Image 1 (tube, rainbow, N blue to C red):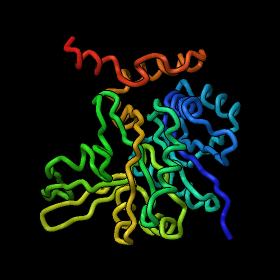
Image 2: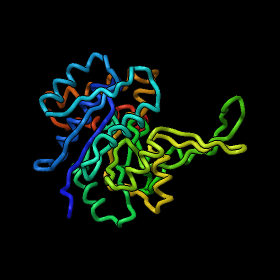
Image 3: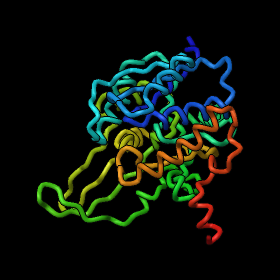
Length: 288
């Protein structure tokens, strides 16, 4: 018996309400999802930012669920992966999961439908497909570089010195199917791996080195031991990056996000060039 296609989308809001609204508005603006069995959920870590009421009003108008994770507002990287793993556990019936970071957005047409087609045409040993992730302020692809699965700024770095339990190590970053924007088939092996090792960051200690698994990385590594891998899409999305975890840069990101969001709320579409490239990057390219 063939299971009918159904797609569960999910993101985690952590006082990033205006970013979530921007991301969702661009998703529905750039992709024709009419008739697609698609249910979106926004998981929330008790957000109290000034934009949360506007987000909730938008979600209500769209029929999108807004669900509390039970976590507080304290910043902790593990909360992201744990919340997503719990979502998978609680939503076993869909055929595919769409994972989206709160602070990414779509600017190319038909990104989601293209990713669905790419995954459908992939060999049986492909568990998912991730978009090429462009760092908005880097002005280039920082995950999925050259279409290579796992290629990223983080994995390209030489081993870095770290201290764990007062002992010095060098740290190597492992590749991952990026949770910034990824489409993953709901298979028994995927669900089993998520239940067993989760989706949160992890470190594996060696004698002199530490292997670091960022969010989704340990899952990706374990699936590779099952001869399962992922693809990089031909589509690119933008990502503010580190919005929750780097408060020193938050003011600039908030400003740029609000400019884009105001255009969408005013039904001006995505004509502004800043949807694709930041003004700062444009000036750097022009040498001004």
